[in-house]
Image 1: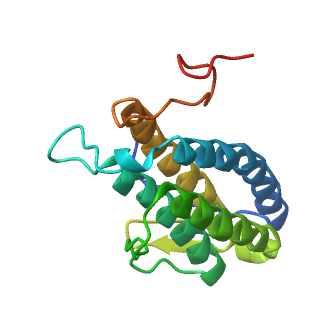
Image 2: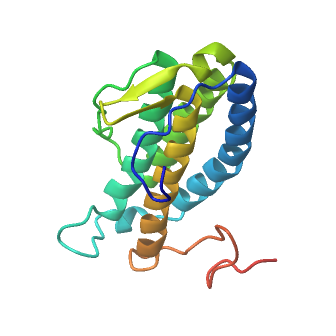
Image 3: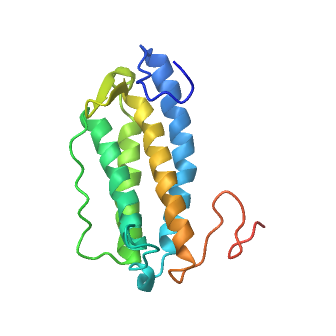
Length: 177
């Protein structure tokens, strides 16, 4: 495989390898979910409609996309298949509702994923016919997807009337201690 190739990288994975990757991803997710929650909380209710360009999502839509996508990824792993995601945010799209939804869905689902048997984690899982990978590797895909969109949200925060939190280091609004 060439560097940068989009080819599937499915290789047979042992149960031990899958269990190791799960622990590594759970460690990463432990930090990243806290930062995502903090980034959500920094979005003021009055800033949800901020849109930097007519073709982009609003800040609120971006935040809800992250929360709903993480839920979808985790449920898909638990179910052993990827179905079409439901991107319908609840009626209450306030920041408080977003944070409560995220805390109430992602943490419990991560606990369920944590207890998945290694053979299920190592099993090949198809992603809409585009590629097949061991199920556990989709946690890495979910991480990268969320971090990508969280970066978009963080870039919108100040213009949306919020303060940019410390994510991987200090910001003008929240310097490193």
